[in-house]
Image 1 (cartoon, helix red, strand yellow):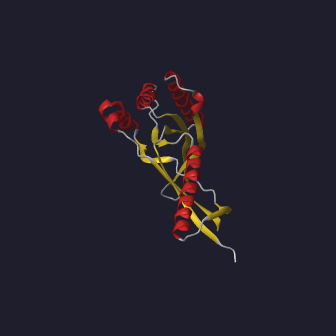
Image 2: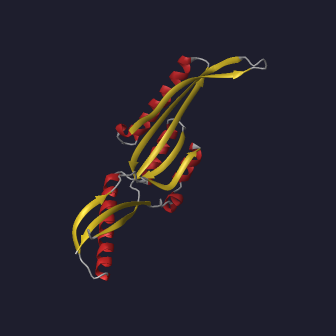
Image 3: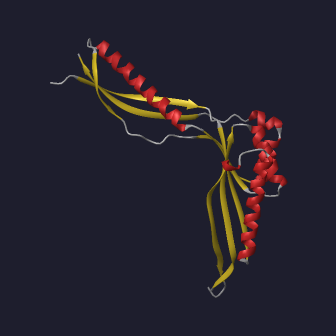
Amino acid sequence: MERIITITGVGATSTPPDQISVSIRLESQDLSYEKAEKEIREKTANLQQSVKDCGLPLENLKTANWYVRTITRLNKNQEEIFCGYHFRHLLEFHLNLNFSLLTRFLQSISDHHVCPALSIQFKLENPAAVKEELLVSATKDARKKAEILASASGVSLGKLLRIDYSWGEIQVSSPTRYEDGRFADILYSFSKSDSMEDICPQEIKNQEHATFVWEIL
């Protein structure tokens, strides 16, 4: 009968975020398709100029979604009435965890009269490094548990026979966030130096499991 020991190792990390992710929602609406489209393009151009004015790389500003839809409503006779066109441009902008730079960016957006809807999250720039740390941690944890159990049982570990692991997604965002806040409120919050000093995003916690099988001697 094969003598084996099967141990599940648990890897855990608690990593401070090192990147700010700003989700930006621009919208326009008009009875005229051309006017609505012109407005959304002007807002996008002003946003791009805000990035340039801060000396930030424009390639960090990415379109997440862009769409146009017709707006209708029902009149008292339950007939559908055309009310215009609605454009929406969703963008994401990433910068290093620097609140002074974020404030400058928000102020620049205000100076260009864009005033979008915003969401701000604090993320990991390199999730792969955290993933590697988790796997190393899980491996060390399993080995330590196996050695303790083997020693307590009066046996020793032999060669490693098998590793079972299912690759999963990890958490990349801190629980600290500003969700769909009004632009003026967010700008005011970050423009106050005493408020900025109080901001310390929560660390991003992750956990992974891996199962190891050793022979015992």
